[in-house]
Length: 186
Figure 1 (cartoon, helix red, strand yellow):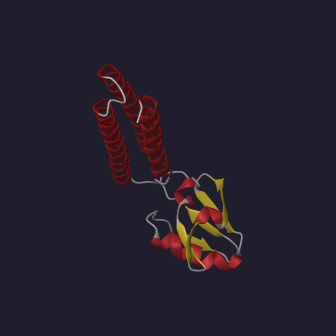
Figure 2: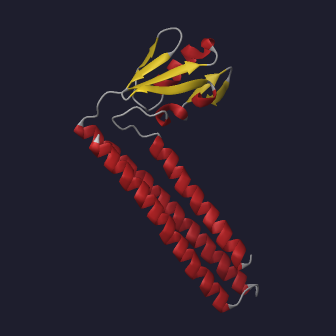
Figure 3: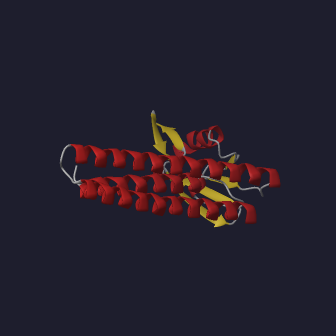
C-alpha cells in the first residue's frame, strides 16, 4: 500500500468508529423524548428482524412522549413486544392505532449510570481508533520493508496517522462530553 492508500483507509475507518459512537449515544436515554431511543430496536416482522424506523413513523409530539405510528396496524403487537424486550426501559402504551412511550424524568442515580455508559462507549471508540492507528503503522512499516516507500515517507505517514488519531479522539471526547452534559443537565 502506498502512503495515500494507508491514510485514506485509516481516516475512513476512524470516521466509522466515531459514527458508531454517535449512533450508540443517540440510543442512550436522557430526560427528554428522542426518536433515536427506539430507532434501532429490531422488531420480528414476518419472521425477520426489522428496524423499527422501517415499520413505523416515529414522532415526538411533546418533550416527554414518543409516538410510534406503524405503517401496518397488524405490527402493533410485535412492536410493543420488541420495545418491552429492548433495554430502553420504557413501557409501551398501545391504543390499537399507535403506541405511546412516556419518558419519565431520570433519577440522579440513573443519570450517573448513563454517564458511566457514555464513558464506556467513548473508551470503546478510542480503543478502536488506536487499533486502527496500529494497523496503519503496520502497513507503513510493511510498505517500507517491501520498498514501496522510503523511510522518510514511512515516518511522514506515521506522523499523519498520529494526527488523524488525535483528531478523531478529539471528536470522540467532544461527543462523549456533550452527551454527559446532556444527561446531567436534564
